[in-house]
Length: 152
Image (cartoon, rainbow, N blue to C red; front, side, top):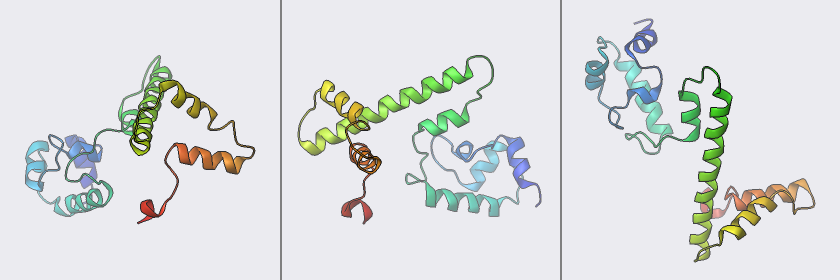
């Protein structure tokens, strides 16, 4: 019936991630029991399940939380909120570049000194003579370039 979304929100389902129980997407019956929902939510449940099946590669398991999830799901209220968001974002960048380094090391068949990797990252936007070449260099280092293998 009408207003079903509001009933779900009052029951504690504010984001799709709230529907997962122990990192797994439950049946409608389990969801109704956990959140105290009345019947008549089957169509809404099927819509959400179908959307998640198409959008979440790990479905029916909840994907590991990314930086975007952590930033938008926290209550950022009060003094120091901007600093906390900044710290969260800066920490994610470090993790991302470490993962990039591991992938390059695997592709190149060996380890890479931290100093060399830091130099490569710092030069990404400074060694090219034009914006187009700089963008290509950035995409290659960050593994965002398209290849035949990636497109198929």
